[in-house]
Image (cartoon, rainbow, N blue to C red):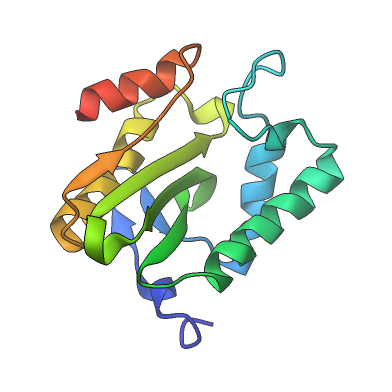
Length: 162
């Protein structure tokens, strides 16, 4: 499959994590990570409430989303959804995206981690990895990230990374 989409050759390595664009073979493990829970069901930390869907529909929607990001990838408008692994186990996704990148040189980030892996510094480590790619590898000038006020963990990651 790598020969069909060159981004599959991309891997980011940190002290504890490996990040690579999500491949079809990664989907089962990523879906298990979603099913294990990402957030308190009483709280919605995402602008699109995708985790509230019935499990079968949520799984289908997730796979369709990952496929769609690949299908619409273009140099000026892209979203790379990196599967995040600890010791070979998928634990979440770190997105890096841009619109009009050649002109604006601006990226955005979005992510989720399975609850059992939260609070260990992995969120900061995975975002730092894609920001290093954005600034050091791609020449980005600006990175933006957003979080709801009631999502202090995400806000702390942003504050830690500047």
